[in-house]
Amino acid sequence: MSNLKNKITLAALVGLTSAGCATLPEVQRPATRMVEEKVNKQFVVVPVDGKDTYITTEMLHSPEFQSYFGAQVLAHNIAYFLEHPESEHKPAHEKLVALLGEGKKLLIEVDAKGLYAGVDGYDSSLRPFERSLDGKIDASEMLPNHAGQSYHFPFAYLETKKVPEMVEVDIIESEKKVPIFTASVGAGYTNVLTADDETYDFGGNLHGGNVFLTLQPRKTPFYFGGRFSVFGNASSAAEEFDVAATEGPLAGEILAKNRNEYSLKHLGIGLEVIGGWHFSDYVGLELSTGIMHDWETRELLENVVRYDEGVAVVGLDETHTSSDTETKPYLPIQIGLRFKLPYDLCLIPSGGIRTDFNDIDGLLNADFGYCPKTE
Image (tube, rainbow, N blue to C red; front, side):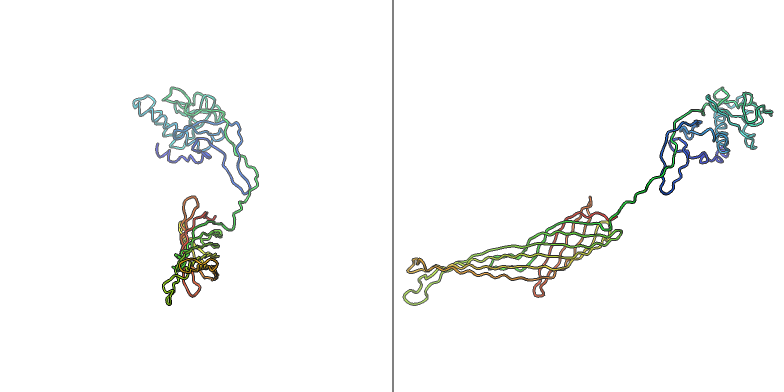
């Protein structure tokens, strides 16, 4: 029994699907696709692995189906004889196994009640029999269904069912346009570490912000772009001192009171070129350089009030102002890491130096942006 079943090729039953419905083979061609239309077809319902499978009536006479149904007949009867080892039908069963093993043809017929089987050239008792209608099975030729006390096999029946039929139609294929470059944008904080100046109470830190834009070509790990930054700071200080006579009759007497007010304003901008490389899906390394330009303005306001015998002299006070603006270009060099975050976001810390070839200042940046993957 098991050897016979192993010879059955269910794949030859033309596309048995997991849902138990046989469909026409789908043939894909360029610029075509398959669409479904509902049509009426007659099918024989046969359980396969516990699921109803629909077999077209044209497929009933295929050698593959003959073999499959022969195995069903055997399995149906074997189950009965295992439960009824003393059955009077056992000799007929043994002869059925022998005839099919010799290659005798199993004939199949179907009507609204179900599916019928007979061995070609033998009657229902499996005795040699001269067929009255060639290729047809009459009542005297039907194999008995011992488990069901009838001459047909109720595990298969004929029905008309609406099933999908695949129809091939022409379509116009559209090509998705993929951009050559993928853009990343963002902004962040910039800090320039310069020298302090106690006279102006200036701590040396220039605070600011930046924006960046980079482009990554398709299917490459490299990207390039630029960053623009603005930064600055301001501070002020004041000092007061007295001028006293050092000799003569007025020695020690205050002659004038002075007040000096200092202010410093520092502003800078930067324009850098960025080049980077993603060495993994999560981290990239980037370098940047370019030019930075600073404007530093220092102002001094002097107030002098004259005194005579300890009393301020009206009309003799003086005010002096001075201002000086210095400009300097710098060459910045920075290195940073681009970390990819969920939702195509990215975090880019970077740092480095800048120099006017006399002094060196430190540079720090912390950027946050949108950095999608390239397609």
